[in-house]
Image (cartoon, rainbow, N blue to C red; front, side, top):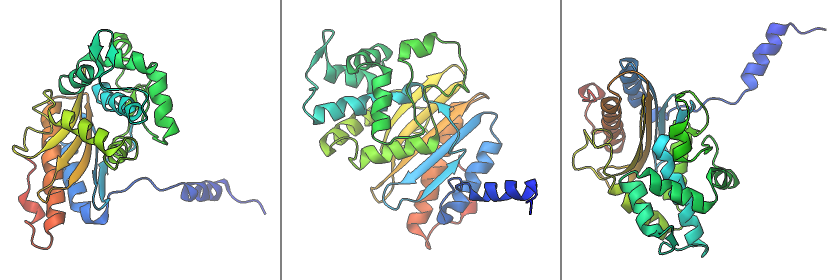
Length: 282
């Protein structure tokens, strides 16, 4: 008996793996973020992951966005992994500068030249991408150094040098759990990210006094911020927020970070939490 094509198509659809979904306890948070994103003129991708409980929330979590300078976290992680294995040292001199000083300039001030010196010393963008693949980091790709990226014709939907929000938070999770680099290197990396001087109008803007370790990314028409937000009980939530096109992207990121912080705080304090309706995200 010949099975109708529509039935075949239906079974094929049902056999596909389900898309990543937010945790049940974070449905209210997902609704708030969806409402906020709907009111933005930008194309926004968001993912957040509780590093204690594994609870997640995402909006366009599987959509690739340009990483811009957030790729510098991956550059630092590869260099530090080689330090961990005795192949390099933070005191190594590269083109007249210590790796330690290059790392600080790259992560604190988002120095593009310092980044490309480190990328070149590591063997180029392909080496970084290969290391990610070898460690089963999927959904995140490195194709060009910073100079090549900036010289190329701008295409904010180019999948080169991109990451999905969920891939970025998974990468941050694995860094935090010392799966990709050792605990001492992780602590060193987070300390530099805590000193980040760029993007003060992004994740940090509406969270005064909240410890945040982060790295920003910026291109014409693109604004990113990724990193860790510390919750009231001291544990961290990994966050990635990408925004392209539209207007007032930094404020959109700031509002999203605030909503995420409040949403995860409500889960921590439930059933004694403030009603969801009390949170505006502003």
